[in-house]
Length: 275
Ligand SMILES: Cc1cc2nc3c(=O)[nH]c(=O)nc-3n(C[C@H](O)[C@H](O)[C@H](O)COP(=O)(O)O)c2cc1C
Image (cartoon, rainbow, N blue to C red; front, top):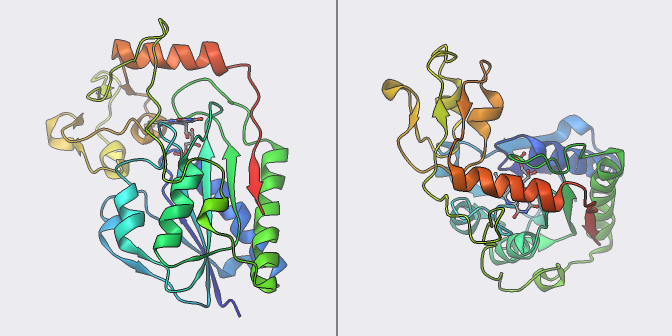
């Protein structure tokens, strides 16, 4: 008997939150629970990821991340590995991806949840607009939203029927393969690990929103909103800046962005539900 449904998501640019909530609310509906019974745990902020999350057999947990370099974002993986305890709860891995490929992110997340002690009741990979490139810009579309709802219904059916999936049933390599190597327009690896967004001082109003939203807690308000720590290129600061003051000018990063737009801008990918 499920008493609580959870949407646990890392979602700096908002896509993953939207898809996870749609799936979790559809599950609530299929289980004849009010949509308001879905509890949200947004783990996008570093502070929140310091607290362990423990679940039990009466929980159904939709756990979600965006695909970064074909995998679970490497700085977020330790949270799902070490801080989340399944305790026999039903778990549903959810990933989003920006129109290139989800590669091994769903496989990796399903393996992580299984190791955490979740019983897997389905999973899905959903196409969403790319966080930093003009790829899949019109996604999620109505069809993607229907797929998210289908995942919620399937998860409800599976747990009612006691149908548990093995982590290895999820598409991708188990264990996950190497991270995708970003390429530039010339096809050579684009090295931008250390690139950080800049702030246009003429536009910046000093509101501090960027610093408060940075998932790594890396932006130093006292130093003109420079990224003092690690930048994972998630785009939270850029997309949410009300003055449009944040931007990347790193040539390798911009070349990778242009390559994605050239090679994937018109290719259509489909969302996928694992039953
Ligand atoms: C650093 C970074 C790496 C990404 N790598 C991939 C990738 O390998 N494949 C892909 O299709 N999309 C990739 N994306 C796009 C995101 O997976 C996609 O935009 C996702 O929906 C963002 O989730 P959010 O809006 O919840 O932050 C990447 C985005 C970022 C910021």
